[in-house]
Amino acid sequence: MPRAPRALITGFTGMVGSHLADHLLAHTDWELHGLLRWNEDLGNVEHLLERVDRHDRLGLVYGDLNDHPSLARAVEQVQPDYVFHLAAQSYPQQSFVAPIETLQTNILGTAGLLDAIHRSGRRPVIHVCASSEVFGRVGKEHLPIDEETQFHPASPYAISKVGTDLVGRFYAEAYGLCVMTTRMFTHTGPRRGDVFAESSFAKQIALIEEGRIEPVLKVGNLDSMRTWADVRDAVRAYHLLVTVNPVPGAYYNIGGAFSCTVGDMLRHLLSLSLRDDIEVVTDPQRLRPIDADLQVPDTRKFAAHTGWAPQIPFEETMHDLLEHWRERVRSGRRFLVR
Image (cartoon, rainbow, N blue to C red; front, side, top):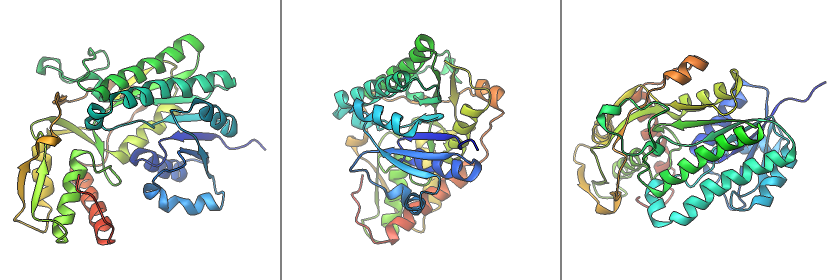
């Protein structure tokens, strides 16, 4: 009897990686292997660890994007049929503080993983996750942003994702690996890291509601336009990417269907709050030196290839994000306000 397909997920413990594991466990018979570092925060995958203990289609493999021999060992151990490369230093603001780490992790880490796969002799279907940040500052005349829009990265993180994007396509063209690259636009929902605007806002609202902090909500740039997608729609897209007639070297924009400014998003979250006395103040430390302030995608190429379309409305995404933080705050955990 042939073995079930095996999938390797880098960035397994992140928001997207954990939701992808949920989706694949529910909708496939695949055996999943999550790549993680020895000191990883397992908060997003606590609900999955019992399955790991039972060896029920889910295992853990240790490795680090900055330790290339560990990637080779992970590929040899798992022998994957599918690879979802989601791991990265993924916070644009942090990339201004630690640009070298960001470039090394995201560019050389991707090259190390793909080289390990190439040298293994295996030919899995590979998803390399770049970012809509590669497009950076785009003029209104070029909206919506399609796949051929010129790259104009506006942060060290965005530059690193340009490298990620190009490294993925290079390994497809040079070595025949079935690598496909995505530029996912803003996506959020439960388990979103608190360094990202909408999650930081939801976390602060939850802390204020519980009386843990004063009713003052700190913000950065509220004028940036974003197109919002739900993480659960994003992982459904990634599943389709690798299973619906995968095209080596292909690259796709993926994103939601609802656009509004960060300020509009904040006003919606505040409308869901149990408090009506929250003061909004600008924190200069939350402002980027340069911001990618128009992020509206053209997703027709991916939709035509896979039939994917977003299903979860913005309002449900924001409700679920706020409820996620309410549950975490009520658990009594201590939090930094970021």
